Image (tube, rainbow, N blue to C red; front, side, top):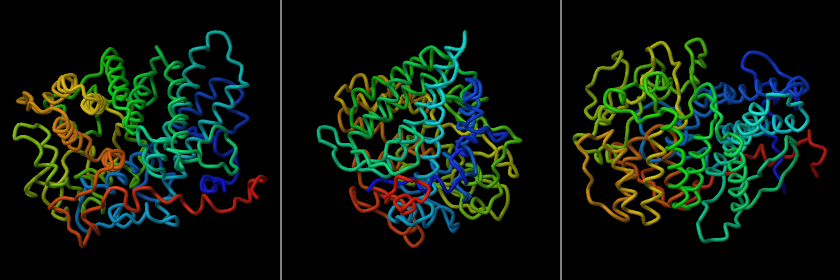
Length: 490
């Protein structure tokens, strides 16, 4: 039986509402198809949806909330007492249940973005381009294809099995939607799913070549190559993962991007787009664009005065913290003692408490959220080289990155598996709280092992073996149920 996409329909009363993506006003399908400029306006709306209240649940405010959910499902984030993300993610109730509402929320929001991207792509087939608009046409189409690939990739990493290089990968993947039709669609195989993702990204890279958006709140060629490197890592295509990441690094640095150094590392991330040059793609959230308690900083900062933080400032796995050298500047991102000042006595003071993410004010949860950083590209390249047997190149790339975090770093002489582990340890530290750890464990088929500062009575378990039930999320029941709005159901 195909999947009916009923979950997506839960967001609106009619199909045309899926194009209501302009952040300031409703936009109908007929209106956006009137001009290329209107299609660009709808594209802006999808970017704005990345930070939203659409899920209907605080804590799941678009991609920033989903980043938190993924990391809370892994082994590097813990906290005390507060229940947000507890049962659904820390205790694995969302991924193991087809009827869990948090499971369904994430699925249908990603597919909503896919739906909107497909509406834009269909509009491009009939819209008049006009003289001098060719570059805008390429940008809109390239970004829409990227959204389609991005949404499907995020879904595939959770609801499909692992891609295993050298195998047929004929197990069930996810429905890959190439039209805006809401009716049932059979699941592609894992192989087909990833080939479709790559096909969309390859076309997008060609369309976006040389196009420079006004700012980092739009996709560009750099982001596409960076996303291709993520996909290649998930496919265990490590040589290409390194090559794609290197391409993205070259493009980024030619465009003025640079790794954070020194005091920049303590920017708090809420102003990362203005105080550093490291963001490749990010939500640039203005102070009057709050999403209130749906905000990333209402859940992952240490200083915003929300119940989720007062009762449960997030902490790093103590064993992961210990992998840093004494000269690693990122040690400042956490309080290992639990004695550093917090805004009020009601805030928890657990050990290894987050200081990486700082809200702009205790009463203001607004802030930038980086969805891709230059640091990740360096780590992708280093891992790709290490796992494809190019130790020298892996050491070169990793050292160039690592000295910006640990000025005393001079290399440890590691090769092979030891070098890959060293890179992964730095990756765990660098990308903590940014949504990568769960998918890293799954793609590498690694056991989940929580550290000595996790309380089993709170977090539910301390270990999950690779391949156990729950690593592949259950497809939401609302998605497999009969959809009366689709005439093709049977």
